[in-house]
Length: 271
Image (cartoon, rainbow, N blue to C red; front, side, top):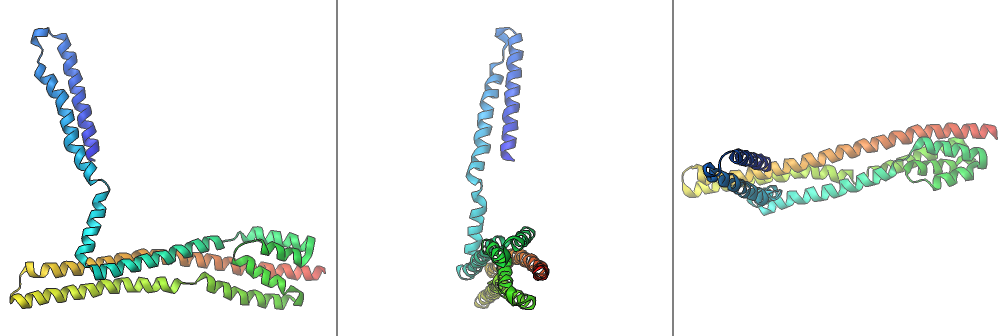
């Protein structure tokens, strides 16, 4: 905003200077007011120096400085613990998001490929299609096709059993994220309690109650509480997003597994 005001001011002063120069050209040389022209030239430079220097110094580092100040004021012990929960929680969440994105499969395309392989090359060709496809859905299909020679019922049981295994892999480490979501506010509240204890200790030492004595302890209490709640909110958003991805992949596995069993029934009837 300051840059915009500075630009408008400079443009306005240059426009005024140009107007004064044009007006002065119409007057005799003896009557020109040179002081107005000099002011019009000198004032934009002064405005730029006064307005743009604070902007350059503040920039994007102001927020970073404020965060560091609050971190120190909140106490290195509890603020460090809250920061550690955020780092660990985000690391696990990002790993899960990458894994789930890689586990997402175009089931319609995969089913068409398996159906074409069954008609042209039989079970071995269909299993080769599953081996060359990445994701839990293809792994489940492979287990079902591998037991298809033993009957459709065995193939269905194999699909259900291995689907449970893949579900466990999809939900891996989610309990750690939920743990960090619970721990972050607890650490903040612990800092709150300790900050209040510190405030009461100062009151006891002084023998009277004053705002200056308790302000420091209450400030520490509020900073740690807010930090813990912010970390919990951030991790909760990631946690819910991961759960939605797991649910979507699970629905894909269930729907496509039913289609695969129907496909195997048709294949056995043709045989």
